[in-house]
Length: 233
Ligand SMILES: *Cc1c(COP(=O)(O)O)cnc(C)c1O
Image (cartoon, rainbow, N blue to C red):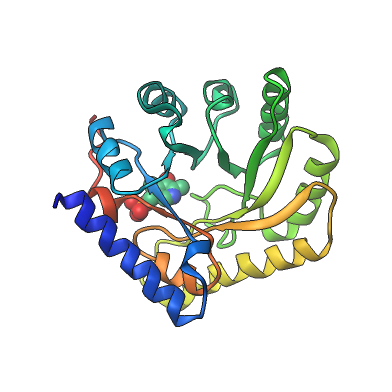
């Protein structure tokens, strides 16, 4: 067996353990393979091992790889999305995880209108308020979502995404995930037209088990499957 297949099995078994621990059905958790900087050959191998969904953070890289892999994978835009790059991915992505400002929502809506499709988006929330992190602050989230739902017919808000702080303090990380879960429940209870809070994209290589215990439905795993990234590719 290849390294990749061994690593995917390891991650899957940890997903299973974490779900069991809190009595969750592991099938409600999507393992998103984060393939930024990963070669297409290696991605092909991951697809053979049952990875169905891949996440990229650079629109042009997504576009290039999509040209080679196409709809044999489902494509996710993760990480900051510049407004002027929406056009590269709008007809390729299944889910945008990083809706974090009104200007971006406007652009996604406009581009989606042009190709006559609706785009599923997660609103990125900056819970820890670290300056290096993007996302809407919790206290602004309700208004942001209400305005998006009112103004942008082509955007389906289907959940929330966050990044945990870079911290070894498990309690701090857990608390961030828990807050995302709680605010998602709060928004769901508002029953805003056109908004469903079905997905919580939280958890990366270092913390996906904690995220699953706190209710994650999408874990974004790169390093634990593909090894350390080489940004020179
Ligand atoms: C790179 C990246 C990941 C994956 O991180 P790993 O620690 O390699 O698993 C997840 N989410 C986002 C937004 C990323 O940019």
